[in-house]
Image (cartoon, rainbow, N blue to C red):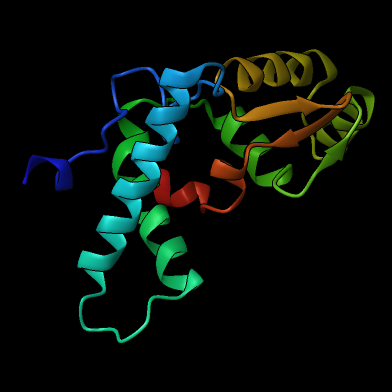
Length: 145
């Protein structure tokens, strides 16, 4: 069954494991297809369980992120450090820069890191506030490398 070996959206430009946001019907279908694929993976990985709980699904998602993201993601040491520091951060860009400066990252480097993490869709801006993408907030960054 080839649909059990790789996520349907890897390489197709849509879905939950790619950095694109759902914008149209075809991308929405890719997201739905990925959700079904993840659920199938969860069921097959937990066949011995009588009930599948949220924890089972989260564990499967973490495994999938570890399995598929390293092939698409390269980070500098400063970027990794920033991700670890900002896991639960939510605030303005100035607060973000200040937080990074307090942890020993120079101001100009902090701005550069912010831009790079935004390009990689690791750092998101919602309603003017910066925060980590959920894909990276809930997975240990050390497990990706």
